[in-house]
Amino acid sequence: MNPALIFLMADAMNEKVGRHTDLFQSVDMVGHSGGKLKFKIECDALSTKEWDCLAEIIYDNEPRNFGEVVGIPRGGLPLARALEGYATGKEEDPIMIVDDVLTTGGSMNTFQMDYFRNRDPRRGYIGWVVFSRIPLEHSNGWISSLFMMPHVRKQ
Image 1 (cartoon, helix red, strand yellow):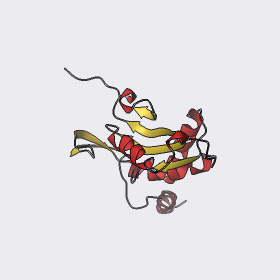
Image 2 (image 1 turned 90 degrees about the vertical axis):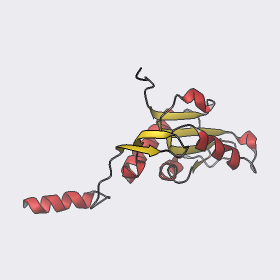
Image 3 (image 1 turned 90 degrees about the horizontal axis):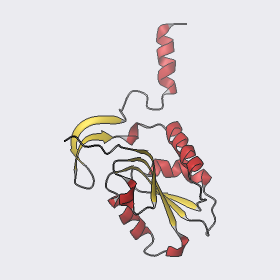
Image 4 (image 1 turned 135 degrees about the vertical axis):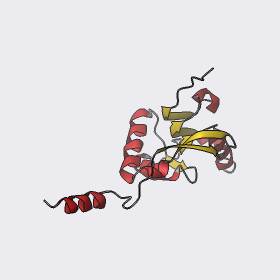
């Protein structure tokens, strides 16, 4: 087979044809919460198939049913779309709130409070993120993470 044709076929299979975005990026930046970060987790690099796989892993590791799933804009929306098929649609099941990266927990906690401001709080909620930069005990126990950064500091 012609090597150029093989290259074109491989490009056609990649849904991000013509560009490559690294998932982990070494950059000095200020995060959404205002803190200084030395690296970025760029979840826009994930393909739809990868979001679907992450959703399946979350579903397999979440023991509770959930009635619906909502994503925190913007990062949580692809994960919410991938998890929609696992929701029961039942009003008695809790709502799953999702995001891509948890840095301080502020976005998740603020979204949860705002979301339930005009809803029945007895329904309950479950939180999931793909990556957590902090120990989850800072999240009041309602958020789970697939991947968590180790918390060993250099002296």
